[in-house]
Length: 311
Ligand code: TA6
Image (cartoon, rainbow, N blue to C red; front, top):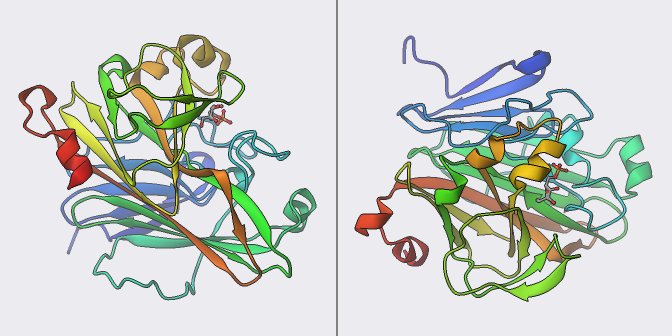
């Protein structure tokens, strides 16, 4: 591997923030900031960026980084009295030098273990002790896996909500379809979280969307027709999925987001919201997200998303 970059590299990122770069022999890569335990980049083996990161993203605490995969914990959105999306995304995480063994042994070399524990100030905000371990792995095919393990180290039970708030990079939002959420119930965040049932077809986009789909399948497909690319999102321990695009008006209201950037991103977030996760003392929860891409030429039916979802 002379001259080749190592599978795991520790370096400095924007504003000198600590960053870890994961590389896979065939060329795919991922970047993770210790600030927020935040994946900010995932590239395929052609070096194409697959995640959206705003050109106006702010890499400075306490602001969360706009794009990539923010982690919403211990609260999703405004589902509680903490700040929006909790505080894990604007705290400094550490490298976990002694992670408990992973159930599945894999030959992956490109992975990093991070850990987040509450500070004294965090305990004043949310009086519960835990260890949040996050393993980020870049698989042989360039798949990106995030596995969260949250252990209750407190003397009493606690409950939380959670999301991997993934920002996918898309060519043109009006050409994107989401498959796998048809006919499901959802809470509409634009209508005071009222409950509705989704219609039967794939979801397409022509205005602001902010919906929490309840009890979804473990696989969801995001078809980017123009790029002939399908993102396949697989999830475990995360029954819900949030779909968000701010569209024009909301985009203009966000200082860390470009006015036209809503055209090139879509958030599809593996989450546990409707039924908060409750952990007794000593108990551990695991929430896993696996992202992959498959080439698709939807029109030719070369790849029928239903096959993706069933396969
Ligand atoms: O996940 C969707 C959502 O909850 C939207 O309501 C919107 O606010 C978005 O998250 C972004 O939230 P943020 O706090 O990062 O501005």
